[in-house]
Image (cartoon, rainbow, N blue to C red):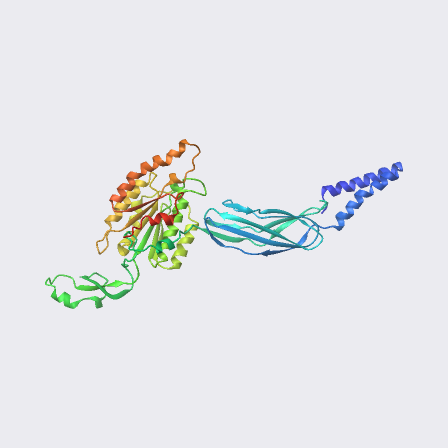
Amino acid sequence: MLTQRTVKLIILFCGSLITGLIFGNLIVIIMSLLPLCLLAVALVVNPPGQFNLDTHQSIKRAWVGDNIEIKYEITSKHGIGYFTVFQDIAPHFSLVEGNNFRIFWKSWKTQTFVLSYKICCTKRGLYKIQPLKWEASHPLNLKKANHGTLGEEYDLTVSPRIFNVKRIRGIPGIAASPFPVLDIARLGVATTDFREIRNYVYGDPVKNINWKATARNSSPQSWPLVNEYEVEGKKAVWLFLDASGILEVGTDIENAFEYCLEAANSILYFFLDRGYRVGMYVFNNNDQLYYPDTGKKQFIKISRQLIGLKAERKYDEFPVAVEKCRSYILGYNPLCVIVTGLDNRHGDSIIKGTRKLKVLRGRQRRKLPVIIINVAGYNVVPTRNNYETNIPVIMNLNTRPRITQLRRLGASVLDWNPRKVSFGTALLSLMKVK
């Protein structure tokens, strides 16, 4: 279709021609031919068209902090003029190299244009990579520009980061820490390795009854004695993740809640990669419970849920969360890992819940090992002036009594500052080598 500039040229041509004819001025009549020539160019020349798109790579999964290169090759066979190409970027992505908006000049011959840029995935989530938007303009702007899209949109999944586990594998010596490296599972397939003789419990198979030991028992009213054998696998791990809205301290991209998700994802990968049975309960977020399981499927299942997890304003006491997981804790006698923040008004609830965890004991009457990952919000809050730089120090002093009280209860507390060290390095502080 013709543009306003073309309509003005038509009016100019008609006006000049009529004026020259009325006054009999040959020069005006000849000058009126200039707009006519431009109109002829508008009718003959077409803007760029017939595009072919070649996508070099379509990355559909990345980690937080990764730089992704997006590259397209667009080939145009016909037309001449300006060719503009643009692609929308999600709000949580930052442009680190190149440009997602380019303007090219298309000549008569077939040309190939390259759009290449790099973006940084700054926040976990599910994103849509939009198709390319293009606009082809006439070289003299005498026709309306054509526009459209190239390619198809696709999903990009950005997962929380996982710390480097190779550094922990390389430590020589014996680690004296609450990590259940060589602990045996409470539940699983029984082996032939004898553990102990105990009283019969409802549900024990009859073949495990030790009739000789039962006959030697002098009390006629006692239960039969059974043989208990070791089971396959390693000890279970139970993860408590705090999803309270109070943890969203900081910016929309960098806050304590995002670092809690990073720590939880790293813990899941660390233990599931080593064959442990891991379960998780998300409190302060509509009671999300994941039954203990092993293997890569368990990691993928929980990790996908963590990608879309949002902090809620709902608040539940942590002792209530412990009570809801009571049957699993008593059955597996697991290592309990709590990922939360102790620098808010919910810190006292963590102390009460930890005290309740220490009371829960299984058949072997052993205390539960507990690890608390404290992601302090004051470490990620941006400071605007010199006076606010002392706020983290003051809030740290306010949190110390809670950490001391938790350690007196027998829990291991990891006070993690994500701006100073990575989670993998911070986790090494709990590994004491003999």
